[in-house]
Image (cartoon, rainbow, N blue to C red; front, top):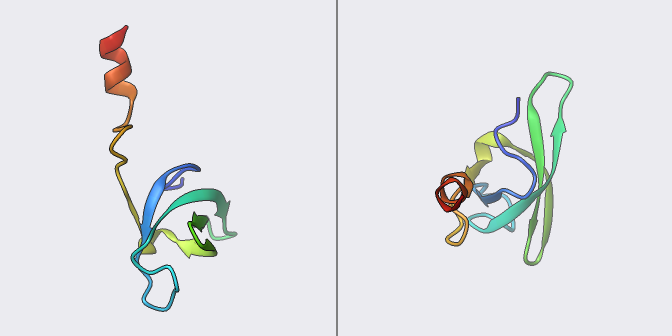
Length: 75
């Protein structure tokens, strides 16, 4: 089971990365042979591959806070 899905906005926490502290978008989810997931995240100036979940934090976007609750109210 993965913690993040494609198109999620995430912030990277990796002091060894050029993208440390930046917000990007998950573009690919890859499951390892051990059942863990690693992620490819695209940033404004490039992308980083093979990021483990513990280095990512979900970022709530201002315009789309989940969407499910808002859509249910509109119907």
